[in-house]
Length: 425
Ligand code: C2O
Ligand code: CU
Image 1 (cartoon, rainbow, N blue to C red):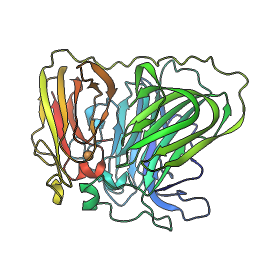
Image 2: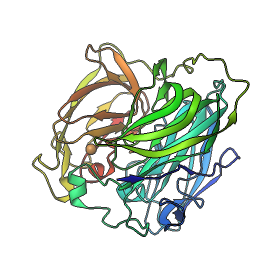
Image 3: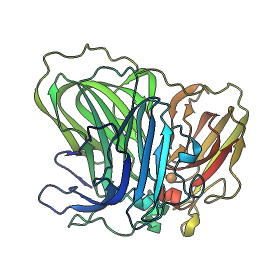
C-alpha cells in the first residue's frame, strides 16, 4: 500500500448545512499533485460530501437528489433516528431512482461525530465516495482552538488514478473485503499552531479496512467513541478504527501532528497537520469528559438473551454466490426479523465470530454497550469490531420503534449475506 505525502484538505462549508444533497460524479486528487485525478461520486461537487453541522436537538431537513446512474439512498450512521428516515431501501423507504429525490427530515438527539453514506449497493457506492461527515455540537462544547474532521479512507487505484473496476468481486467479498491500495486522511484544515488545543474527529469511511492509527505531536486523550462521550477520557495510545467507527480526541499540539497507519511491516504516513506559528494563549491543560450521553442504561436482567453467530467466508465453508456469509445460518434479509422486541426491552446479544476474518457489527437506530468479561457495561458504540474466533456480548435497550438493520459494516460482507434485521414494536 502507498499513502499521501501530505494530507488532503477538504473544503468545509461555513454555513450550517446545505438544504440539498446532490449525489453526482466528482473528481478528487487522491494521487500526489500533478498525477491523475480520481473520478468518484460525491455530494454537491465533492467527495467527501459537505460537512453537515448542527447542534444537539436541532432538526436537519435535507432534500436528497440522485444525479448518479444508480438507484441510491442515504443512511445517517449512528443517529438514533426516526425509523422512516433511516435510509434503508426495502425496509424503511423506497429506492431513490436516478433523477428522483427524497426528503429527509430528522432530529439529532445526541451530540458527537457521525457520518452519512449511501445505503444501496454500498460496497460500490461508498467506495466511489458517496459519504460525508455529520457533526452534532454539544450545547456546551469544550473550548478548543480548532475542531478538525479527519476522514480515513482508502481507494483501489490504477496508475492513472482511476478507481479499479470489480467492485463486486467474489474473492474480495469472501475475504477481508475490497481493500484499497492507496490510503489517506482527509482533513478539514492542514495547519495548526504549537500549543493549540485541538479536537480531532476521526471517521473510518472505508468499506473494509481496519485502521490502527498512531498520532504523534499531540498530548491528547480519547474523549468519545462512535459519537458517545467516555465517562473518563483515556490516554491516547494507538487507536483502532474499524469501518464506520469514529474516535474523538482532544489534545494540545507539541509538534507537527502526524497520522500514521500502523501496518504489520511498516508505518505509513497518512497525512499531517503542519505547524504555523505559536499559540501564546493556550487553553488550560486539563482535558475533561464531554457531557454524558443520554442513552438508556440496560437492565441488569435482560428481557431477551440472544446469540448471533457469524459464519462462512473463505476457509469457512462458503465461497460463492449471494450467501458467502451468514448469521445464525441465514444469509441476507428474510421476511421474518431475527428478533422482535417490545419498546424499552433490554437485550443481551452475544456476537460470536466463527469465521477467519474480523467483522464490525452495526445496529441501526440504537447505541449499545459492549460488555466486559465480568459482565459490566463497557464502551457505548454503534459498531463493534469482533476479531476472528472471539465472541463479545452487547447489551442494548431497544427503545426506538421500527425495523432496524443489524449487519457487518465490512460492506462486501454485508452484500454477500452478513445482515439481518430486528423489529421494535
Ligand atoms: Cu453505516 Cu447499515 O450502515
Ligand atoms: Cu464482516
